[in-house]
Length: 112
Image (cartoon, rainbow, N blue to C red; front, side, top):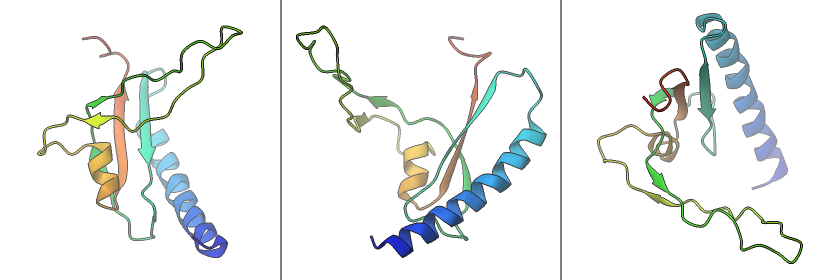
């Protein structure tokens, strides 16, 4: 992708992010333990809609390499297998549709 096109996409994504940050900050109570996870498609356009999503149900085996001689491990990135039901609007599905994904993570409900 040429640099000029990539810069344009990044600029549009940043404009969306600035707008969303202001909206979501105003709509989120302090100390609510809410995290807004926002992901942008590639390419992101000025017309890219925002979709409310849930995290995809992903199985990612082997996130880390075996221990090296010094005992350290390295992160091994893998997309993993998406086991989400097809009717679920996941973050991955929204991105595949060219939409901006907005997932609300409520950490008060973690483990509930």
